[in-house]
Length: 314
Ligand code: RIB
Ligand code: CA
Image 1 (tube, rainbow, N blue to C red):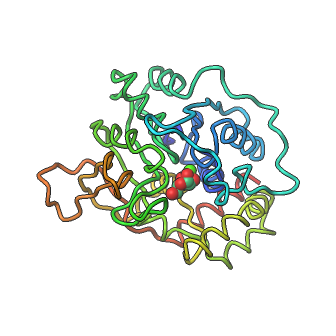
Image 2 (tube, rainbow, N blue to C red; image 1 turned 180 degrees about the vertical axis):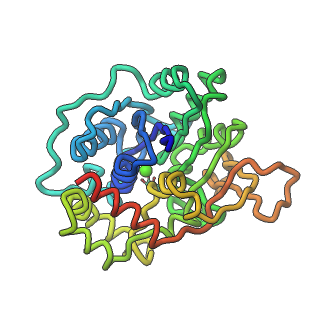
């Protein structure tokens, strides 16, 4: 069975770390590399966290290339989001995961993406689960490589609600202009947004069962403390949303996700809607659908994929 070759773009954070484990622990996926971006924390921290998770899983042969430090237009303030993923970005566990002995590549995220796409013998899937700055920069800097991108499966956006503002989801809200460029690119795009990721969760009881399951599950469980507070007490969700794992699970088993094709763009100048993924659900605009939007997920099958990946890596 041919593996699905991906480059995963992460702002490692807690749910990014879980998604990394799913990608690394499932035999259908081959991760060609991780590129990093600011987002949950600054890019130095998200890069270090990505290296720490690779060492935790033993997959230290997979390259990591550091990317964007800030959005295309608006400045980036690292401090505003430490309450979700912790100050260190992966749950502030004690003792912290050991400082990584592996280093990122010398080349930038965009150059790594470009080189990998150029050298690939067949098109590659991009799986960005943070702000889309690196992907938008790749599109602008290397239009000749678009035919080597099989599809872009993002975690981001939503048809209605937001989690950064009333209508904007965090990854899109971090860099709406980048998202606008990606949605306009003509690439095949799948959007795993809040409509589905808020239905793809471990309940607050199920997550406790990870504690003693195996080495990786136990470590991830320890990371989730601060995230439980955010999902339960702030977002009033029924469980811990596994946002970033959904694009990966969608690739592993497309049957897990219910989706529709809609026209989607990112609002880049609205006073109250800046960063919203404007989704033409009722096809009121005379625009051809450009995005496959996830609307629902088979929750139990989804979290089992994650648990199986933890087991495979332990
Ligand atoms: O809205 C959820 C997204 O924002 C996830 O990618 C999470 O890691 C944060 O980046
Ligand atoms: Ca993320």
